[in-house]
Length: 128
Length: 473
Image (tube, rainbow over all chains, first blue to last red; front, side, top):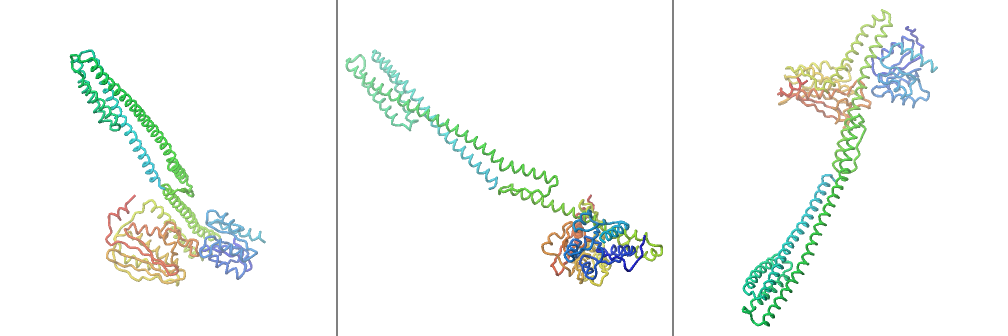
């Protein structure tokens, strides 16, 4: 299933405060053919967005410094054409979390790797 | 106004009413009694007047000695009755004086009666006519007197009757009033309190009692509302704890699962290459899971008072040194310094004390994001050992300091320092554990300057209290 690693794949920004998970998702998505950027919290993610616009955001909700809610509203305020967001959360009601910030899709932690790929692929294609 | 004061007022009113009624009835009764006495005596006096009249008739019939004897007896009795009447009837002394005067005249006339054998018919008839006239005059007076007394008697009767009716009516009124008073001030608030308690019992912790008055029930309502507010806070904290615990436990599971799945998709070479990194990661997450589950368990056990302390003689100097050594932060931002470490041996549960110290150092590092020294000191004093951890971090806002030791409370919740790996039980657990050892935990903190958390352990531990707590359950 491992896709070809390319330099030109669509870019995804992963935002999660857990360094282990961040690195693992980075590895998984890179193996699947995406270019991956990482941020430890909402503020870091906003800085990364200044450098370039990814095609998708994978967003954890509970983070220190700037959480998912604050990040999402700041994002909508700064960029009129919003980037699709996939919410990843360990909270009990992931769907509601996703609705709260009008995300495009959600993943409930812990998730299957296959689920991650499908959700990411589907969301990027749909938006295209 | 307080219900107690209102009841005291009602009591005073009923008491006054009863006293007034008793006084009226007592006075009327005394009056009636004296008037009955007078009537009885008047009756006696009238009877004697008839006897005198009879004696006069005897005299006229020529029975001189018999008449004289009857006259004397009747006269003496009449005298007594009149004197009694005079004594008891002070309200109308004029009347009885008049009667006595008439009687004296009759006596004088009696003495003037000529002795038998029969004197001249003229003298005889003059005296007896005069006596008869006086007798009639006296009878007339007594009749009048009798009528007055009868009128007085019936008036006293009317007054007594009226007093009884009024008293009965006002008693009924007071009782009816008391019923409504109690219904309004006691029964209704009680029913409201009961309904409120039932609703809170069903779990409606938002329910509040409104009580506008300023009586005892207002106080009860305030206490009740405080209780529901506490319950509400506790329930919310518990709900938050559960969802935080679930969140925290799921996060390492997510890491483990992703790592394992990723490994499954890798070629044997890739896997072999990345094995050390992968295994270190898995180990880290397992430890994290374990710590989280232990925290949750510790809290539940503390709630149920089931923590057993494994008390043993412990070298505190070595313990503090070991913890400080092991806790050296990986980054270069913080320096963990051991400022002072007195030698000391205590009978404690060394694992628990270590857990407390680790927790305090962990917090100190976590909440000084800008770096800076974290200083640990262990000082032996006269009767205790004080261990303190000082940081130069963000400090605790004054309004949150009072809650810092509460279960599930996170002082920095909702702020930039809301650290996601915190369950909000660390300080709560730590303080409970220190208190189980017979010690105390306290802190000083200034926002933006830093915090110092300290605890003490008594050198001379009360073994009963500590062991008792340890072996409870």
